[in-house]
Length: 176
Image (cartoon, rainbow, N blue to C red; front, side, top):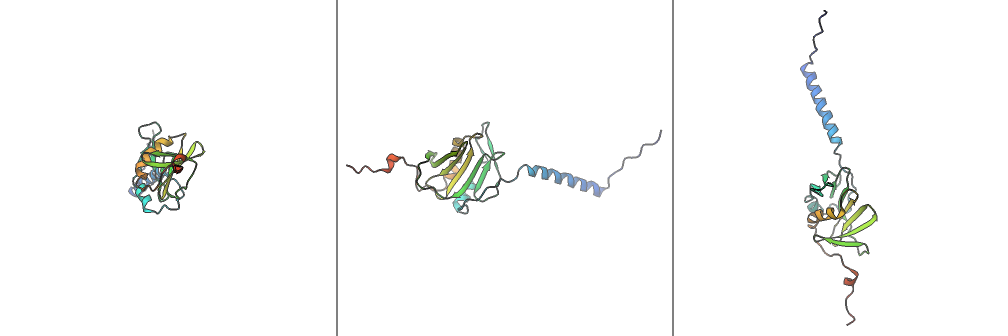
């Protein structure tokens, strides 16, 4: 019976290079899974109040539910994103909205104007705070009410200088 060839041994330098290539390939594969979410920066994103909001953003939204959304890295100042793919996008530094007939709700001390024109995507914009914060929510993935409730503590660091009113509140009783 002929002798089997002896197994070849990798030289130490080649073995180290092979290990480095394997580790680098693993890092690239995993890094590809967690790319930063591209978001356009809001006009007033450099306002110091936005930095105060961003450092208070939660690591996850809708915690302890089937719809839990983990925070993701973004590519723009004054922003936040949650979900894979991103189902919640936050932009601090938006222009404060003026008077509107859109629905306005107060949640945990923060007033929000709700734009429902792109259902199931809802745009919530803080009302009575400058700069404003916009939160775009895919309501098919996670509840918009849950999201703005959980973001209220971070957003509330921007002082309120106004709030939602009803039509009845806008008229003074001067007929007296």
